[in-house]
Image (cartoon, rainbow, N blue to C red; front, side, top):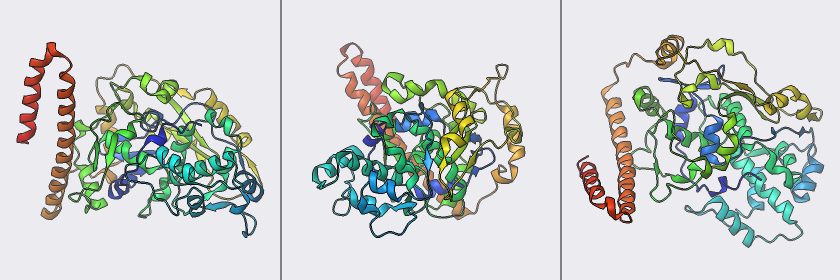
Length: 443
């Protein structure tokens, strides 16, 4: 169905201050985060590498109804509509949690979704429920809690209709739909609420890979695991968990521009990432991301540095407002395949090629325009901070550097164990390992 690799991701702590500071930088007009060093946008390449979700295939369009009573009774079971008044347009996430066995069984801290599902299936009494219906319930839970989560305790029933024919689920570009859904909810997350709609674990790890200043670490022994989200451990650190979004905001303002990682996936082989190999033809394209009533623009031309190119100056308003999102219920049934007909065709044609400007020596002209355009938001004057705030910022940086040092020490140990099987380079490797450990010990 396209979710197998994602199910290997183990649960981790949500870095709420980090996410809050990040989403406050979202600019709806250009669908990008306004960072001190330029626009930044999660791309389909990020989705494929980090989640393993397919980013190529059929766009996620289909029917949206005014009443889902009959569909829910057929696809999930009559117990989900029993005693409810029509029209039925949403499902309580609590009822899905109970249906997959969460009432008496919580997922363990080291248990992947795949292992958790196997345990639930082993202990769950299907009763009159068919195997297909059980799968639909679990995937609906996955949709409502992760991929297409909202700030509500309910899930729109429109996603359940996508599960009618399970044999066809593998043909959808679920990763593109997830990204479009995330883009559509970021503007509604700007009211200083404590939650963010969309697949926030993806957004969090995306930020860690680009500007690593959170509480995540790449674990020893997971260097070969895919997708890349499985390599991360995010646990609350008592030294940094008391920080507020304002502290993260200040840290972002002062983050060294030359330490931003624009191409974090160099060295990764496509053969190890099936979703990447299949989706690579889309990684340098201007695209429209569809998720039923949601149509969001992926302005890749604003972040060509993620392709290893220099960024040219671009007139942001000239990009237009191609996207549109409908987040409401309708009085009549809607067929998004028909309503989005031209957009579906645009997706199937692969969007438009982003043109590389080859005569650029750097991205300085872009940055000059960028800083002038967003001067009011960036605070690039590096204002003087109060002493207490500066101390907290430095303490936070120290804690994060200690976390990074732990990761580097783990890498050194891994390199050291690998050298044991190569006798011809053992002597030189030992010196390198000793020197590295000596440096690490003195930091």
